[in-house]
Amino acid sequence: MNRVVVKLAITAAAGSVLCSSQIGAQNPPPQKPAEHVEITKGPGLEVAHDDLAIIRWTSTNPGGDDDHLAVIHYGTDPKNLNQTAKSHIRLNRGHAETIFRVRMLDLKPDTTYYYKVTSMGAGGQSDGVESSVNHFTTAAPGQVTSALPQPN
Image 1: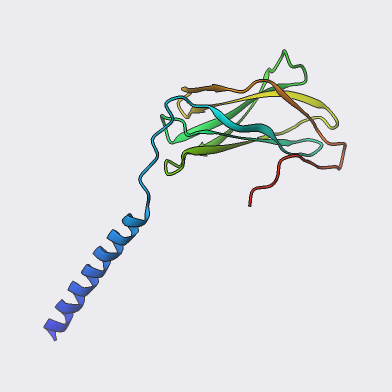
Image 2: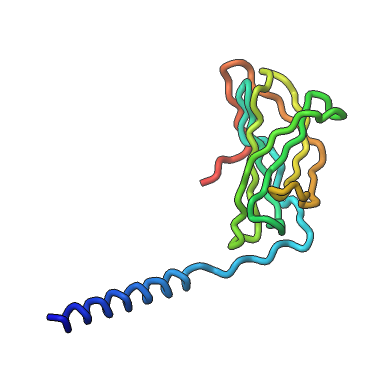
């Protein structure tokens, strides 16, 4: 009986080692961070309601911390982008690019907003990328505007 227990213990241990090595084999090696971070798609309006909007853009994978912030500077005057909206994101080093999304809250209905986007590490270190100034108009009360195709 002791031989059976020992054999089961060895079989269970061998199985867990086998499972661990198989799981590790499925994960691709991390991508190197881009030498120069650049926006490759967008930024653009994903959706706008009468009081909120979501802006989305894609950039090459920044270096630094895995914890990052997507940042939008915005306002109703293109020369005065004094409001800020941020969204936390965790980088996936297995991908060469990162998709950033930020929700802007407490907006006024049927109002044109101007914005530019950037990103930074959680510690405040800039990724060195910033878009030009773009704009969108919030929807009329009770309406929704969808601009970018929704991701699958």
